Length: 420
Image (cartoon, rainbow, N blue to C red):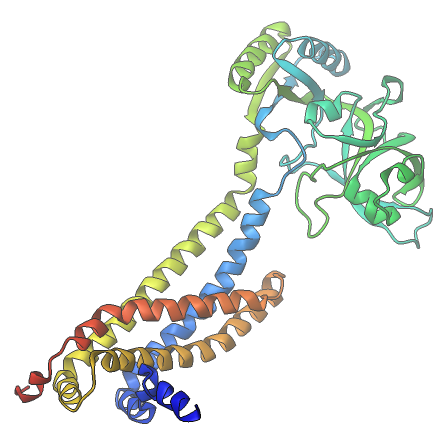
């Protein structure tokens, strides 16, 4: 039975490959091989790190903000006369907007996801400047705020009208109750039992106390500090100023029609102000994520270009070898080598070259990631991305040599008698 197993192994195509002559043949082309190996190494380093960066950027682009993005638009109402009363204007505008049939709700606020405008407060569960704090983006909304944003209240209650503070920009009084996001509740109170968090006291900037009245499922911060984008706190406040921003949520599928109607109504209802900066949330999101989209596009183009160039290099070198070894291949065929033996020889050469490139490429990939971590605070490169790039390069190499290898396989033994 042992003899049968040896006979079976000896009949396998790769068992008849003589690697020493193959390596010697490759070393005779050391400059061409060195260039190809370096090309493979650079491709692996770029692809592994590029795939990792693209994956991170795509996660950012696809993460939910917590609000009804597709049905919300914002506009700015700017008073320009001496008699313009900001508070009265906001109250009249909001009352009218909330009565319009196509509008679900409206709120006056300068802070919302993708606005890039917000204060950050330090929150803690025990008063005192020496206590551990959790940073959170602050939103100022009235009792209609969570409905206007389309966010979900998962525990506790919403603000009541009597709890909402109408303030000027110079008034910094903190309210007695707040709503917080579920992620912030976990960071502060180390629990996912939201009902147990409702009614508990937290401290704002070490001194101001407030009771948690409710927990909202998710509300992304207006801009993205590292690791804190899901931490938000909502205060029952409306800040009055000559230039006010309204966030308006419409019924599904009628956003554009509602924008035109609303802009026309507000422009005509009060001649002491102008309406400007009318934008949808989706448009603002595209503007905020524009650099990420550009980075993903550039990286994909670079990776595709490198892959094509590497494939062409592998195919070109293999085609050259077939051409210069035409008579040698014919002699091997005449001495008994079959077509599969010739095919396996070129596959073996490719695997040796690709393996050398991959070994160097792994070192380059780690080195490149160390540089990116130190310069741009990127996370460490997971091993899975290097392994994925390795598999891609092995497959790429086999596909690239397939056509010239098939051509070599079909060289007849008679080619050995022809002069070169």
